Image (cartoon, rainbow, N blue to C red; front, top):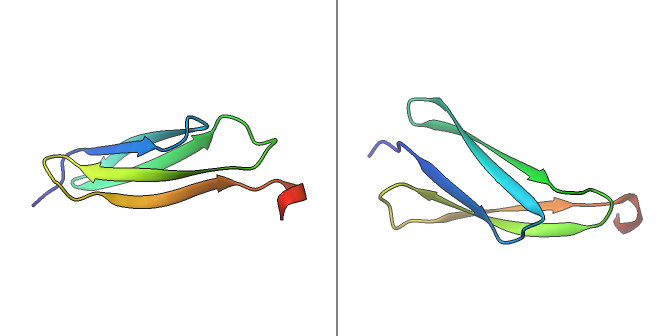
Length: 67
């Protein structure tokens, strides 16, 4: 079925996800860390509208001292 909307949530308040529709059934997910001076990580939960299926992705900030 065609996806009309996506809901994206972050497991951490340190990241802010945003969803942009880029075309029919196409989306761009952007994730912005609130700060980059310390290492943080989050799991993003991506759920299409009217679907019980959920997908996951990870986001993290790696500082020079944690590499």
